[in-house]
Length: 298
Image 1 (tube, rainbow, N blue to C red):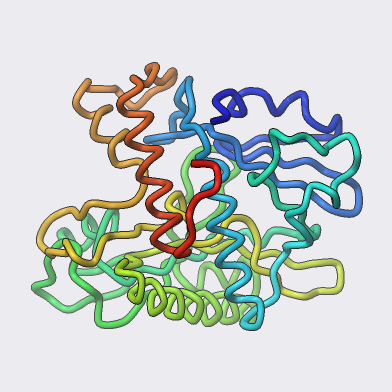
Image 2 (image 1 turned 90 degrees about the horizontal axis):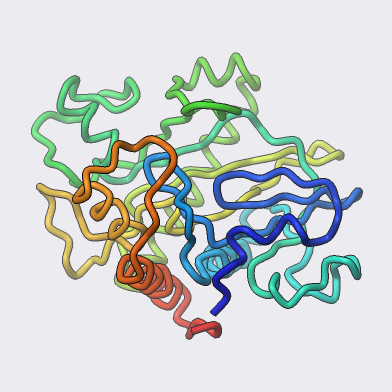
């Protein structure tokens, strides 16, 4: 298992780099290299130690979904083969955790699709019987399935938190025609993914998509896709609306942080090995259940 990729990617490639909470992005000139590290964040705080192979899980799940939807919409993937990288980047540490991608101008709207009433949506519904301004039927329970998936876009904040916006507010940012494309494509992919996930015994409760526009003006599906970091996956066999559901993600970590009364401010505490291993196994279980394949770095 690779345990130090969370902090080591500053030494890879030598190309210009910018880092997010989880990913490092290298500008290779005519393309970009997306590297998913093993860093993990909770409550918007990056923990000081990571989850071994988490980056590989996220990358391999994304590649699975990108491949599944190739005929549905264009995406930014060029290659996931080390041999296609510049010689300076061909490190075994990158194996399984990178995507070589087309360059695209990121559309400044995050496309969130909700099929179930969970998370911040449930909190808002309790106050207003709506989610992001969209009225919903009365009497819904926590984690109930919605009558139909809803599109609840947000801004993409450079700093701080993303903010909910209406369709019309999004249209002012990017134009009405593009906003309609974002909505229709995102709902369509979510619906197809949810149908497939159901055959694997998984409920896809919600997810978020990111889109970009390439130099020819083509709309591309970009970033990660339908991973445990960008989606809520619940085991269907244990689904019981009326309470939070178990999920294939970092819930072990969140629960532990709440138990120790973490104040949700940096710096994060060092994670005990038990939490690291349980979280790792949840991510790997997500991979095997979604793809039907054994995780080769197990």
